[in-house]
Image (cartoon, rainbow over the protein chains, first blue to last red):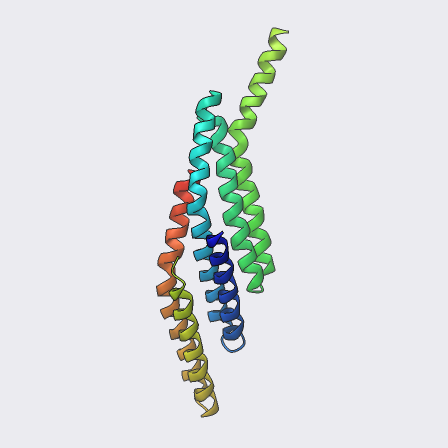
Length: 131
Length: 64
């Protein structure tokens, strides 16, 4: 709860500073917004490390191979990074770059999930052969 | 999370904007541009480590 208020205060402060500076020096305003985002995201991700530990525990309990769970976590990471960078580009007035970054993120996520799809395909093929 | 960084950058931004306005008013447009550029470089030098830290954190956390 305390942390939530801290994050909210940091976001508001950063937005206000960015707004004041953007009027005169737009590029520095963007840097302020970038730093605010980086600091808050960093804090949020350090909190998230507890969740990944729990995910590892769950994976051990369920007996799934690490290659099944890893693509899921990786895709989440890719989505977070590409979404943040895309929004930043859009804020800077570069909607084209933003959409390209998001498309690239989708492509990379697909590439990461490919081994998983291949596993599903092989399982299906095995089932078809036995029946 | 050090909020000080945001305030530091905001202070540099205000300083740069004031210098910019003074230089533009006195007719030295190219020096005003150089001031803006210098401010941007200084701020980026401060920021680049934080960005690198964030990306390293993401890399280690999500196993990318």
